[in-house]
Length: 69
Image (cartoon, helix red, strand yellow):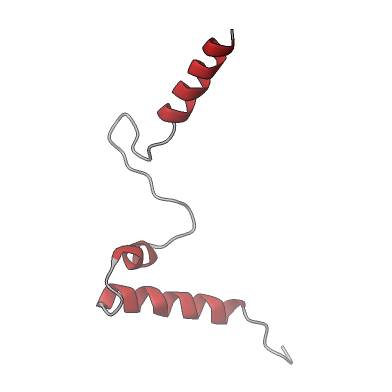
């Protein structure tokens, strides 16, 4: 009985571990823009990395509370 439960758990974990679906569609995580995703894999001083950093700073500035407003 334990081995059956272990095998079923392993099948569940292995079957759900990839981000590519059976149809071939590769989904992207929610909350990241395409520029941020490209920035993850870009060289530190490439245009893609600069654009991702610029998006991060503008996102943080928009969340920052401004005194008096």
